[in-house]
Length: 608
Image 1 (spheres, rainbow, N blue to C red):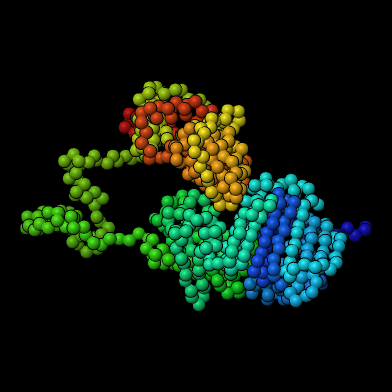
Image 2 (cartoon, helix red, strand yellow):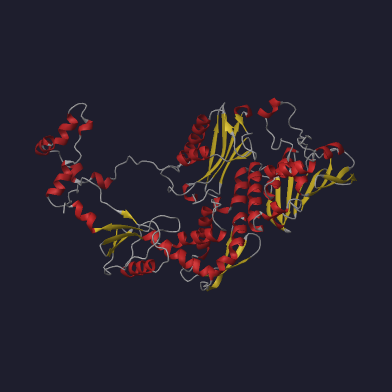
């Protein structure tokens, strides 16, 4: 039988390799920017058109390449960083695998102009589908100018899987941001479709953070600096009031390489314990400098996940460094051990402790419990003070039952229940609404219920019943970070159906011409910013469409929150709207809207 195993052609092999290395335009941006940094550039310009689909161009003033190196850099596994296996464990450069440019050349049309420092003339190379079409001398500045055009033109199926331009531009901005933060001493610029998005002059890290993440951090950054023989930790964390509902402004760098680490993120979040709400995330830009031999950066194809030699030690260092920084800058809460002067004037403190009071105090069982040694675990569950409160009617005795109250979660296929028996509905603990039903009663969670009502209302608006826009007499200008501006551009059409009339207004700015009627005057900008935060929260899951994420984000942002006091009219409106919903047993996220209690279960509790 004939042999059936053959070597793949070079262009096919490069296209397969590109599946791991170049997943989207942002992947190519990352590789090209890292190459420019490794070349020692002090100025790096990134130019993209159509979110990188038609053009990605990186221009740097680095050391450039010779004619031979310019040709060799497009070969698979060609690199100047590694000569033996030991070099893999001492890597301090950004790119080193030797697959990036070969993969890029396999899925796009590449033009390269480069001139080595000190050389009189440069080299021009044109590659199409891994095939060199042109190679010739050219006059060009020192450094490298590389362009990749028509990404995935050789793999149309891959191109079809790319997202919208605004979404792909957002990914490009994220990669650009990570690299620009890691090297604040380098000039960076980003131009998209002829419009400059970033123009970052070299400077201190704090200024680079503010230029990228926004002026809102101007006076809200806390410096972190811990230096030891084992590890150095430098950077900034945001003050507690900067915490957000999404993880967007969280950056870890190890030896100047951006990484993702849930373990180290927990170390930072734990340092903020009890300082920020549980459902929010602190802002941080932290750099860890450690001996490369103490970590492995080859555990993930994108090199964004690494393995430390001793993760517990790194966790402890990071947690301690952040705690120390917050304490040093008086951000952490402190205990006040000074008694208030008014408290000291109280008769219980200033008055004498009479023999009668002493005898009364010593006669109690609580005193005897503490007076005896090794008796702490025998303290009575109900104190004498509590018993006195009950005796004099100041407190109701706790009801003790042998079994918990039986409740049945209404689940399964949605069935339209009978309507409430009456309209005597009451709010309990500013969280729940008690509604009497045939054969029992419902305990409705007001936040989940309103979220369901709003979700179905938004769904209807996006289908065929747009929400009316309330135009503003004086339009507001909303300034956003480049990533959020790109995101808002993507949502603009759907937001119009939901009552938001917004238009682009220069770089990273929008004019708010109108909002829905329920948005308070003067709160227009805040409403959109909160909506974007909620959307990014849902954007972590790839299981939903963009429109579904927007509907859920809008419903969660606008719903009545747990703990809000409602008027009788608001209670009735909410319950009536809930009973009009197509689905009423769960909120959009699948959490129960109500619990159903049957009278038969309650009677069993009382032994009937």
